[in-house]
Image (cartoon, rainbow, N blue to C red; front, top):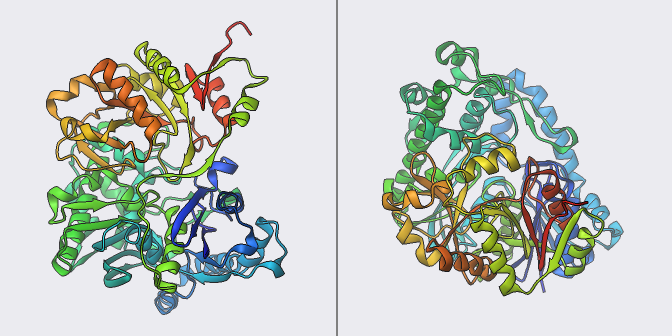
Length: 578
C-alpha cells in the first residue's frame, strides 16, 4: 500500500490529508484541534489524526506532498522584487517562511512522535495552484474537464486556467501577482469593516441587501484583459509595499491595502462594528457583481479554448457560492464541480493527489462526493463528556431518537446534531450541525442573535433531500457541500422563510442516502410530518471553529441558548434544577 500525506503548512487554513493507494481516507484542519480559526502554522494534530485514521505510523508514509513550491515562478518573483524596493521586507518574510518549510521533515517526525531517521518518505513540493487544480479535477469523477483555480495569491499566481484529461493537465493562462480577483474581494472586505481573515463570506451575504450602484466604479478597479483580467493598481498598495500579514499564534491577520485614491473616490472606510448603511450594502452588491463578471469572462474564454460541458473550480474565489450557482446560466458550461475544501485547506488533499497521479502516474479511481473525512466520537467518549455536566441525558435507539428530534423541531427548538465523522471544509453538512424548522419566520433571528451571536443579515442554509431539489429550487444542481446558491421557486418561498435569503435564494446542501444515510433519514422524517423535505442547517459552533469533540459540543450548548443536543445516541438537555 502506498501512503501519501498531503500538508498545507504555514498558510491560512493549515491542514493535512492522507490517501492510501489513491483513495482518500482522512482529511483534517488544524483549527478544529487548537480552536483558532483559519490557523496558519504547522498542522501537527491534523497529521496525527490522519495517521491514526489510516491505521499507520509516520514510518509507513511513502510520500509527503507540500502544497507550496518556493521555486515556482522564481524568476518573476525576483524581477518584481527588484523593481519594487518596498517589497524587499516582504521578500525577507517569505524567506523566513521558506526556512520553516525547509525544516518540515523534522517537524513531521516530531508531530508523529517518530525518530527522524525512521522517516523514509520522499518530500515533494507541489505548486499552490497545481494543488488546487488536483484537488478539484482529479477527484471530480470526470475524465475530461476544464479547470479554473482562482484565489488571492499562492506561489506568485492568483489564477490558473487549464484543461484536464485523464492524468494530463494542460495550462492555458495564468494571472500573476499583483493582479488578483481574490485580493480585490479581500481589500473591499477590509474596507467594509470586516477585519477577520476569511470574512469575505460576510460581504457575500450582505450583497443581496444592496443594489450595484457602484458597479462602474468597480469596473475601473478590475477589468478583462485578453483572456484574463487586470487590476487598476492605483487603487491599491500591495504591489508597492506588499500586504501586511501576520500569523501571531497562527491566527492570520491582514491589514488594509487599498490606496488613498480609493477612499477619495468611494468615501472613507467603515470602522468595524459601526452601523452598516445602505451605501455599504450597495458597495457589497457592486463588488459581488463585478466578481461575477470577471469569473464569467474567465470561464467563457476558457470554454472557447477547451469546449467541454464540465468545469472544475478551486481556490478561495470558488467559495463564492453565489457566483458558482450562476455559472451554468452565464457560460456554456453545463456542469460545475466544486470540491469540499475548495479553499487553501483543500491544497493538502490536492498536493497528495498530484503526487499520486502526476508524480507516480497512477490511474484515477477516487471520486470526492462527501465531506466526512475527520474523526468519529465513540459512545464512551460521548458519555464521558456528558458526565459531570449540568445536563439530563438519555440513550436512545436511532428510530425513536429521530422522532424525538422532529418533535423538538416542531416545537420551535434549536437542536445540535453531532453525529459520525467530522466534516472537512468550511461548512457543517449534517454531522456537526445546528438544525431547526425552516418554516418559522423567526428562526433566522433566533439563531443569529441568541446562539451564533453574529450579524443579523447573515443567512442560513437549507439541507434538502437530493431527490426533491428540483421541486424547490430553479435550475437545481447537485450541491452536496453547499457550494452553490440557487433560486428558490417563488411558490415555495413562503413555506421555508428561515432559509430563503432576501433575494429569494438559498445556499443549499443536497443530502444523499449514499453519503449520509442518518441525516437523510432525519430530513425524511421531517418531510413525512410536514411535507417539507428541508431542514435549516448551520454549523455547530459559536464564534469559533466548528466543534470537533463531544466535550466541545456540550460546551457550546451550555454557553448558548441551544435547546437540545443530540450527541451520537444520546439526547441531552439542560438540567434546569441543577
